[in-house]
Length: 329
Ligand code: AHM
Image (cartoon, rainbow, N blue to C red; front, side):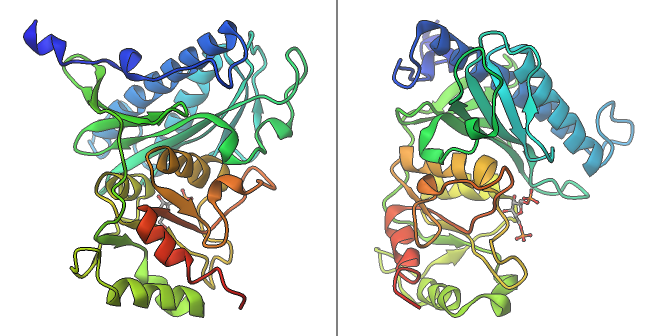
């Protein structure tokens, strides 16, 4: 019983308010959607643990794993009857939920990111929930998801690493939950997560250095030459898997960067279901996220797979990096 006192389960840990949810119905729908997200994360997490096993009942390769994860998210969100529109990184077009119930929400998600063949690194999932702009009872439209990330009602990510973690916000701070495999419950392990003001690591794929523009090259030089607030040199940490790279950055401070470069003039990461929800989490935890010129949260998506460069993490480090992009060329 003493141990049980310290176990706060997911339902008890999330901070809800009726702000942004105009009725009790929509608040209930939001809770239902978060349950569907939790179910998806548990299911995909179990599949991910079996990847690479010769006679795995689940996915056998990257393509199958992505398909299975996508199907899991679509099925559980659809079954919630709490949303009308879905945008997945795995689907070219948005999916209108044919039987939306009372659902007034649109959900954007990347069901499995960072998956490599063979599966040698930690992976993750990212999601964001918007309140639909079209009136109840009307067909959902693209406008329901083409909203700046500042309009998100909830967002979060799952890390499939040494443990499965779910980090989420409903716009009232950020909480982190760790899956207790024996209970199959998410336990509140990181309440009120706060990003340190400054950190010691930077996270960027330096392999592209020769194709960075002058500003990005200068930013990188600054990170290498300018000591941290403690006077220590910075350390580079890059897994090439965005969710664990961002998770480490949020927990310990520092900066995660995926810049534009000659091969990817808009960067690689997608605004709607990668950069936007992660930026929302970062800002809710006291960090920052910018393209260098503008907060990620203020970018108006032009399409569902719109890409943006991203600099995300500790306020001091993001500001140092972004200072290289703010002046006229
Ligand atoms: P995707 O948009 O094709 O899913 O790729 C996203 C992943 C991120 O998890 C990771 O940060 C990035 O691609 C790594 O890209 P790179 O190998 O170019 O450094």
